[in-house]
Length: 289
Image 1 (cartoon, rainbow, N blue to C red):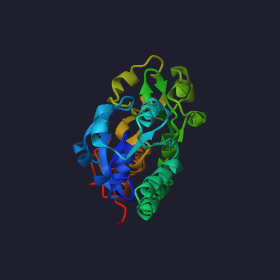
Image 2 (image 1 turned 90 degrees about the horizontal axis):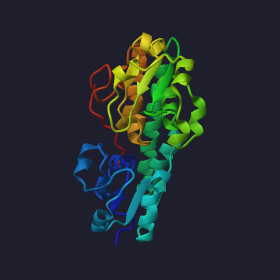
Image 3 (image 1 turned 60 degrees about the vertical axis):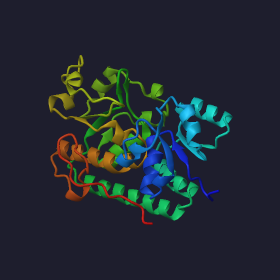
């Protein structure tokens, strides 16, 4: 029997990506169907969506640990515990908690030092983005939209990353609300806030910019007037893990650089194609072994 878990089922993407970045991808036995990072993880058996799991497929994998995320997966995790599986549920909501998740995952699989190194690398990357944003002539007011019907905004780690990237979120009071239903806002509130930049990240579907422009009463909002409507794909922003702390924040910074008219530093350019630019270079983040 292995000293540490060796057949791990990950019900969300961020723990899968973390294990791969730690050099422990061979421990991943099953993944969420929404997993896209890293690409090689897609070859693993897909055993769940976010809110539903294939218990028969999980059983066939004989996992010795299942990793989950948040109260939204409570039904799944309760059933799995009843079936006798060891389950660890994370609930990271802030940047600091994401870094803590990385360190904890590393400890669970016996590579704690690599976890510390990886978390420190992420933190240094965020510091570099923060320093670059200090060049901005002003900090644009940003409306980040997680969903379009109803309008949802203000998820904590995203708001923190918007600030790191150089923007000022228009609904700072929402970041303490963990549940999406508690972050529903009205169009009138957006209009009244008069944001300079719109950044959309609709979970599981592309942002339809023409629909944003056509919303009733939005024609005079600054981001419509000045055509500062951008998308950062949800796979980079709405998974509270490595993607958000690397590619996600780089794309946020890149679109905000464009919005305020400054160059994106080459060393901080997004690795993937972003809304307004091309991919700069392949991602290489790995913890030292």
